[in-house]
Structure formats: C-alpha cells, structure tokens
Length: 244
Image (cartoon, rainbow, N blue to C red):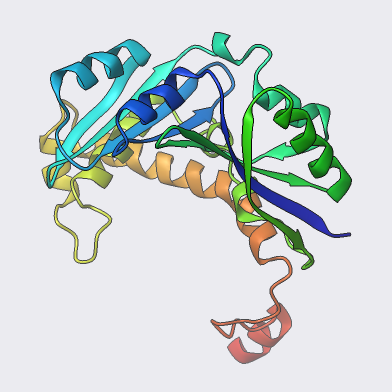
C-alpha cells in the first residue's frame, strides 16, 4: 500500500506565525509533547530587546545560547492553545502530523502522511475554507518503508531517563565528549559537577543505555527493508562456523 506525503503552508491567527512575520529572519520550530509544547527559536544575529521580551512571553525558557552571533532559544509552554487546533483537523481526515511545525516569514509549514490521497485532498479543502493555504508538495511514497520523521517521538526516546541521567548526558554532549577526537574526558566532566567520577559515569552510561534501547525499535524499522549489508555481518550460523 502506498503512503502519501503532503507539505503545505498556511496563514491564520497564531502568535508564533505572527512573530515570524514581524521578524522575517527568525525561524521557529514547534513540537507537541504529551503535556506541553516545546518551541525552538533561532535567529542569525543577537535580537533586539523587544524580540527578547516577546520570546520570554512565549513560555518558560529552557535553554538559551549565542554562538557565532546566532541566537538559539528553547521554550516550553502549555497545550491550552491546541484546543480546536489545526492538529485536530489532521486527525479528522486520517492524516498523521509530522513534527515539527516550522514558522517562517509569516507562514506555518506542515507535513502530513496519509494512506489515502483522497484524505489529503479533503483536508486541504477544509483548511482552505478559513485560512490561506499553499501546497508545496504532494508525493506518493511507493517504497515499502516508514518515513523517518514518523519513527522517533521525543517522549518515547527519553522514556525512563532520569533528570540526573539527562543532565549527565547533556553535559557530555555540550562539552564535546562525543566528538572525534574527544574534547574532554570523564574525569574533567565529573569535576564540573558535585558528584564523584564513578557516580557521574554511572549516570552517563545508564542514559546512553536507555537511549539506545529506546531507539532500537526505530532503528529496526528504518533498516527492516534494507537488503544491503554495508558491514558484511555474517549470519549467526556462519559466524559460529568461522569461530570453530
């Protein structure tokens, strides 16, 4: 069975879209988690004070950094604005929403997946009744594969990872522990915290293990229809005979 992917952009009343219209160099990406929205904002230069004030009103700031004169802010807000939202319309027409929503230069950009092209057409007709809609692409996915964007909900990837484990993982990532060559060591990372090296390493390893375990189901789906074997992995019986 073929899947159908449609990408389109819309204009309607939305604080994020309106913010992107007032600041055309700003890019806003929006994810919906189980109990909140997470919004990522990036700008090519350090913004004016009025933009920073507007960003602060969007929700709780979880992260903010400026690198090479590029601002990066992540905020968190409640889901109350999703009531009667466009996301609910996707579900009415059996279309699977593909996050994130991207707000850019006064437009909201969406991508959906459907099993029936008629559902996509009906959805677009419904949206056109009360907002400006521009279709960017409609594509039949003829290969028997699951689109990668459907595979990894953030809340599932981080299921069962504790706050301390997440903090250990984030510190290692931001300090270049996973770069090649590494820019830091476990000892140096532990010295930045108030826990012993062995404790920090335990938090980090448990976080890595849980992330890989959670990602395993998505990895199997991505590679399930791939016939190529780039690593030349031997079948179990062949490997056993080689070992003998």
